[in-house]
Length: 403
Image (cartoon, rainbow, N blue to C red; front, top):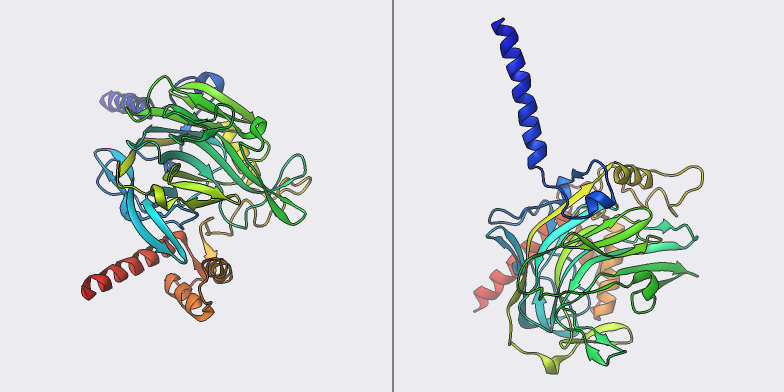
């Protein structure tokens, strides 16, 4: 009898503990549970409560490649007091032949995901205008290709969950947007006649553009921003309420979950479609400034998991993937941030040519060999990040010794 009682007690306690775990697991905030009912499961690889004093470098890349007027430096990303903080500082510097005036922080997941519900609690930055806190998903790499339902070949997918405080110019009102204007947009790139063609909010608003004018200032407090990406729809939520949706035609590539603090008007402008610095507007006023992220949580329900599994498998009847062997699923044990020596050399050559540097292939190949610490012919995202950090530290030490 005692044995039976103890067995029953163990079962009861096990159920209680299991129920507690389920009850304690966070669920999406707001209307999504009614809009998309199902068994939602948290995806740990893309979720982070940002507790502790250091950023999880196994999950987040804070030393990504620079682009345009944006210079990302890992020292501008930090974690403390239960939040991720990305700051922007006024620091004039040179990148190749280009003089730039600001550096800022970014955090991008090493791994990629396509479908699910993506939610973050974010507080804007104090500086306005000039800096835009962003929570976004984007694909990366020339290996990504997707054949859409309309037959177009997609080479890039970007879902902006939010871009805060952009201060974009409104052609109708002839004024820049106010601080409470929130952009929730889509961007994509199609391959047409061998050339890549951008589809953006301002050129195709019906497909890509959503705007929300908040009754509060995003700088004052944290708010919850989210998006659900499914095979059929992209749906945006703010503080648990749906604020916009678009049919999902081109946003099916594997994407990195990303937070960044990007430079904006009046410190940058556009020339021939490219971002350029506006040096005469450079100021220290309001800098450094920082955005904060209390948490990011990503869930998938059964439908999302089935869709994810389907797009990650080569199709044999009517393939939706333009190049199924490489488009959606990396080679075995290889993530989407991994690169071969040939790909690395090609990317570096394009970069060197753009910056006007004399090409040195032997040097680039030597750099790759240093990165590839396990000598498997692949430089992983983590290997490259460690190598760049080592070089950065070495340069700083050399500079200190010279002084």
